[in-house]
Length: 418
Image (cartoon, rainbow, N blue to C red):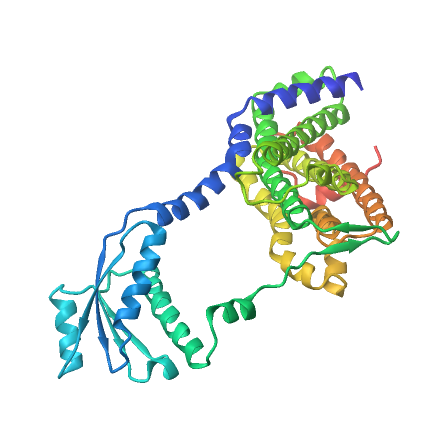
């Protein structure tokens, strides 16, 4: 046991100091930045003021559109459009084309007759005008049309506000014990999603780290030196334990970030986060299945690393097993919509993806405790089976050089009890 702890410490500190682990930690923040920066630039970037020509066919709505636009621009604090009305047009198509072609107008809008009833509006624009800019002026015209329709129905804006008032909905969950609690969508959906994402990220990263380290140790004959002092079971257990502790550190790091944001950033982020809910029994279940999933894949990848002499040969096999970790992401919406379907049940009992599906069941579908406990024992059983198989492969393959073992040979090793 002492040797296992020593190997685990060595593996843990080696991986923590590696660039791959540091990159893995910051990848979620990079993704958030990549997703957020374009949105920020789109909202806050300075856009050129567009010239818009309006041809109003007997609707007399130009002044109202101009007034609505002025109010909108005053609220935003910036000018976006300059309107110009055109009347007494003989050949509309030729006139519109000339306005655009000569760069007199960037957009030409034709308000067809009986606009209030038909809602018919034609937009003509240069091919470098974005759809967002067109949508903005479209909303302005729609507001004018809507207000006129309200007047025609002899309603006022307060009546419309009353009709459009949204429901004040609050969700409550009642447990099997009859306990009622307010449902937090962030806790129910986002936190399980974070655990799944980090587990996926950890599996993809640890696969590379484990396989690479084993191949390097075999190539440099370090394995032979290690096995002169310890046996293969201790070496394998130490490596699995080390990478498992790495996964725990990883998910703990992200949870600490969430807690810090919940305590100090609640006024700056649009998330209703009750910190006390983070310390519920569900978090313990998430941790349990996260750790079990991490250890199961670590065991698989340790045995895989012993089969190859170079990384190039190992990549295809690693990629195949990594696909199992991606499958739950594609089925997430289906499981949430069909929690009791036969497909959901079958997928939940496939060992390589059981940890992911159980996180979904516990967090998003509120699986009962006895189901979660039963699935935990089910997964532990398969981890033991996989460990026994992997240990026999690891023991026989780790000192084989120059020749990759064949499938019949590996089946013989698995059947062997020695």
